[in-house]
Image 1: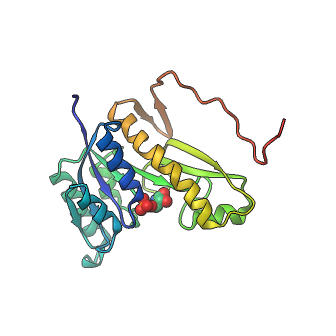
Image 2: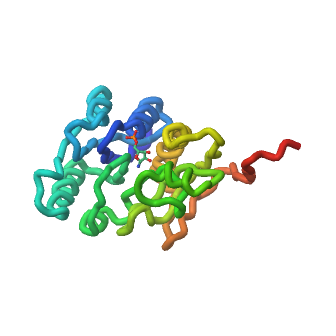
Image 3: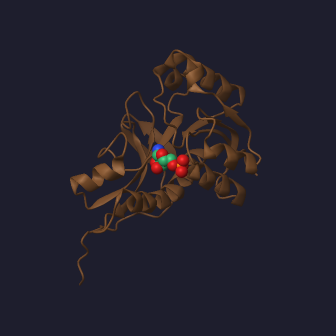
Length: 220
Ligand code: GRF
């Protein structure tokens, strides 16, 4: 078996994306090993999921630090100590500093529950509904110094339906997050993702997406 990519997952909440990554590591479709799961939130459900899977965990509570960069320094050290090669933010509710980004150049990714560059930030399912968008989705992107601004690696699109509220839309998006996040990590593990400024080139595997989506659908 070829070498597994050592990833560190940072999560603050329930950890369903972490679970999807754990599941794909277990079934062999993701050639990665979760070296450590770090949370800033002692009550994060992600901790239980990691422990159940036998994955090492660490809680670094941001409230124990007076400065943002000190917190980030502690997280970076923990990731380096664990030999992490790729940092995976999965619902990590802290903005990370340049020091963190510099420690893992082009090696930090995030998943965002909207089709970037539309609707960065928080409460984005509600934002998409309020705007009246016909589609939303999710985006895996590299983390740079901005909020949800880094180069885009992978996206999935979902329709917004007439009776959606933020919860139903979030659930439809989350289902796709669980598909694309492990897949994006696998592409990185295979060395197929090449960053050139804002452009991300992915070595093809013969499958090309050409389907156009229309909402409301055209019946004929
Ligand atoms: C997901 O919607 C993700 O896109 C966003 O935070 C949420 C985390 O959910 N960044 P979970 O903790 O993985 O269930």
